[in-house]
Image 1 (cartoon, rainbow, N blue to C red):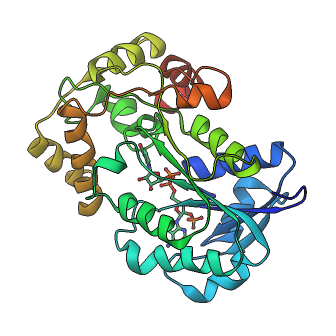
Image 2 (image 1 turned 180 degrees about the vertical axis):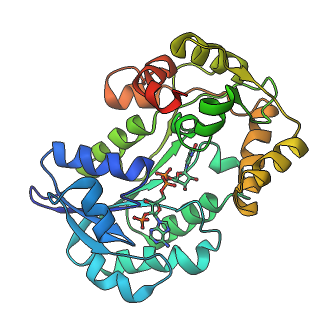
Length: 288
Ligand SMILES: NC(=O)c1ccc[n+]([C@@H]2O[C@H](COP(=O)([O-])OP(=O)(O)OC[C@H]3O[C@@H](n4cnc5c(N)ncnc54)[C@H](OP(=O)(O)O)[C@@H]3O)[C@@H](O)[C@H]2O)c1
């Protein structure tokens, strides 16, 4: 990475991307956000970074967005399933534009799960030949303060079908800090990092923690997968997203989401943010 090399960030208005932009700026990097709505990116992140319109699946937006970019933070928007048509051509365009390094926001366990889209994207990235670092986070703590916020806030309940399975929650801000580091520092190309918290609580333990910090009882509802489906649909969650959630919570229910890794601590030189610290930081999100 040259001293004034340009770093571009996809998904800059999302959980991880917004924090990647902030971290890169704090490190003094030149940053360009690639958003469907540059105006929204500017409202959220200010005008320190440059904001350029970019739409996965609209190749006409690629040349201007990728021009002069040295390093790229690549994420797959959760709503994009057809990655061969909408993500892979963007990767090819990045290679053709001379991008020298990519950090890809993937998923824990992706190497063992060919069914998830991130698996195909990783394979495409390897074949595309741009040196890439694979970031494979576990479940984001932010799901509790976004997707599950209203049920906790208004119904004092966590409604997820994860049984007694453990989850090695990670703070998306920690993931972003790692992303900024591997984009700016040499030596991470070709590597894959599994990014998790240190602990892996059950959802019953998460509910206890929320009760303690918020000072009111929060329970873990533990619905069956079918009851979860009906509940989410009645809340208006799109069918495709409910299916993805069911897949993720079934992985947890089967006891396969609790694996912890030392990678994050090794890379950042400090322990990962604990769920307790996260809940304290975001307590206002769940105040009734
Ligand atoms: N949630 C978890 O627990 C978890 C755990 C591990 C991995 N992951 C992975 O992390 C990724 C999600 O990251 P996130 O939570 O930071 O995302 P997010 O908060 O859901 O944000 C999605 C971003 O995608 C952008 N976007 C949507 N459609 C687009 C399009 N057609 N073209 C260009 N940009 C588009 C949006 O930006 P604009 O609106 O500004 O365009 C937005 O910033 C997913 O791949 C997910 O599988 C999630």
